[in-house]
Length: 351
Image 1 (cartoon, one colour):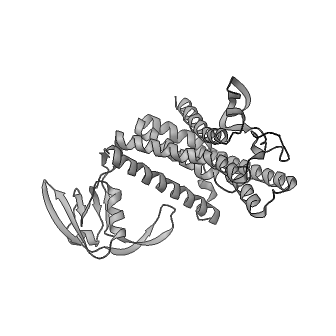
Image 2 (tube, helix red, strand yellow; image 1 turned 135 degrees about the vertical axis):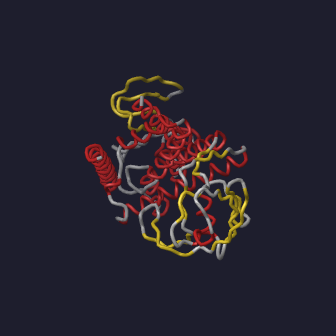
Image 3 (tube, one colour; image 1 turned 90 degrees about the vertical axis):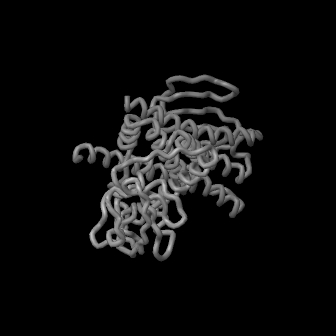
């Protein structure tokens, strides 16, 4: 069942990505010859409105084949106003960007649905209090529920850290303990910590950790829009930073996951709850959007760079350069895929 869920989710994400390219291409009058979910031998196809819609054997991606555009034939030129190669560079950039953009839109839609259905977060309930910490000195105890900090209403544990970091000086904590409301003044101290990339940083802390308790937050349609926007932006920044840290060597290459890891994550989420599945689908959708914008020639981002070059230099890169860079791009992608699979197999055997 987990494998079926993985394939359905991946196909859905690929379909949405390629639909972005397709709609933008059709908007500018470009003929789309093939809309494919998967690669290789076709399993099913149907011609509708001049486009062959097909499902192919290898379900790990997809593509739209436009008239006048073929990575294997950089010198391809097809006459007609409905040809991709006859469109202006800025129009081609929009067509290329539309795929990743569709992934961001899909993620926002999924986060919006999650917000309406009920978003799960850690409860703002204290689990442990560190020795000699500002929280302990102020009298904070395990089981205390933090209701408000200064004038900020607290609903999730995440908001506690955000509020402590974003304010200065002493803070007024309003807590609920045994049915009673108590006020405590806490002066955070700057301490050593690690961020999500395991980098050593300094940040304001009060010395508490959360209790293993989950709270469900339900949003109205207006606040759900804000939630969806914030989560999409937050996820995008996290993945962009992750790629940057990987290039810098801060994140080891052993952390790269392949299709096996993605499949396991989706399978585990589907077994947990529909909300968990929607959340991981949204995160993977953002991931696809960000990674496809990387300036690697075989990806949308690489083709966007080619078109930006054409706008600046007022000429296209030579067919030879285009071909060499595209081959290099495929080598990079192939190497990353093999590394991901290698890491997946290592995790399976080494736990």
